[in-house]
Length: 467
Image 1 (spheres, one colour):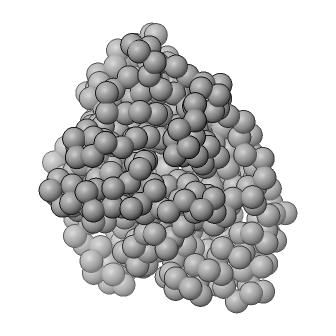
Image 2 (cartoon, one colour):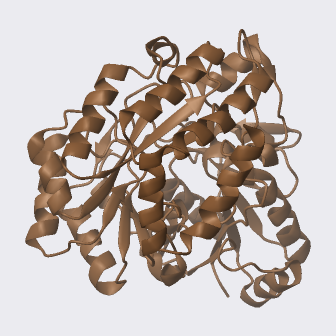
């Protein structure tokens, strides 16, 4: 019998997560924390193991988990609900839902008959306390960080304080997941695998209106340099990963710490290709010393959160950066020999065709090797979501369709018009990726990794059709 079964649900083909082959770090941290308490844990990543309903039922009946934990982002939450329903029909067990979406809208999930508890925000300590209470038939009314039904009402317990000492957490339980099958998050940029993700800090002190802070909060907390290096060594020597992605929101916020991590990677001979996944803020002090050490330590690609080519829009979305800072940061990285990636958005509040074209032109003139153009998406829990509900019109209400990579506009507000946003997003990809220098870079990458063709050409042809 299994004590706890943790499940990463299958991402439907209509969402950005389709084809996403990245280990769910949140579940992995919870698993290791539970194991540390003596709990027997198993894990299923349905994005890797595509099980039919009957196959999944057989596993549930075989293992008879006393508790099932399921994670959910917004575009995956309906899949999570359906999965919970299937499990409840199979055996009598407690089902806990966690992750970004339930944390943003706990009442929505907690009110469903198949969901017993919602874990809000960071899940390690809450899941450990909840599991203990359930197994020992103890009351859960005083456990911070959970939501649950009481009759027809949903009760939200007091929030749990964020974990201050991240070194108190054991390393992710990668042994429960198919590590060799995980790939980089950007298949257009890298085909090395197995690949791994590592989180060296939690929390973001900034307040961008499109970003949800409900899981890790706005208080910046870091792991020690030694802890990061020890996990990095396990990834390189035990799991023999070919690439590592740092998924911090703010890896370079503390420059001295980032320098020490790079020095340690070099000193311990742990150099493998690595990249920044979430994007480094352009207003962080990118000292020459850090940039050089990142390169020497194996970093080959830096992504920047550019968002917009309009200073007016950047101010409106509370990004707290300027286009001048963007230009300087990208130039510094390119001078050091990095591949560079610009994360851009169209359809922000306050946008019109002119500002969106500014973003396209700005991205082209930056000289980045790659650019990603997403549609501004009002994810639940963000300031953007609240503003759209109060002042605008939400065009998409089906969580399955919350795909910011799909090219569909999510809202209209003020001067933001659906047709303009969708046309400009297609135009952005076409104008950026048909530049001779970008085509040359892509050509070289395809020679290195011919499998990239199957990823890139359909996207380019789709952009041509829409432009």
